[in-house]
Image (cartoon, rainbow, N blue to C red; front, side, top):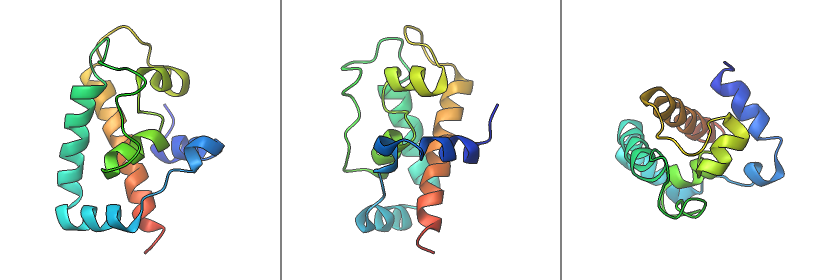
Length: 120
């Protein structure tokens, strides 16, 4: 399996994925809550919105603003089951495994940390 950094590098080649960036208010929120809390949020969002075999409103379940994890999901193609299948070869129509959930959350967190590093 590719490293998270290699996956992120490949995703940045997409004009659509590359346009997602954390705004200062998102960075402030992360700094206020801490990365561990943001990671907890990511786990909860993925388990609730993406892990079921047939998520409610699949393809439209992830907003494009109002939480850093939502923005990261679009940047990392972990926003819906269609993007998971296209970009990460995780097929639709079955519940995500714990391993897949961990992979998705770690990819989201790697993207967030990369975004935070760009301003440091």
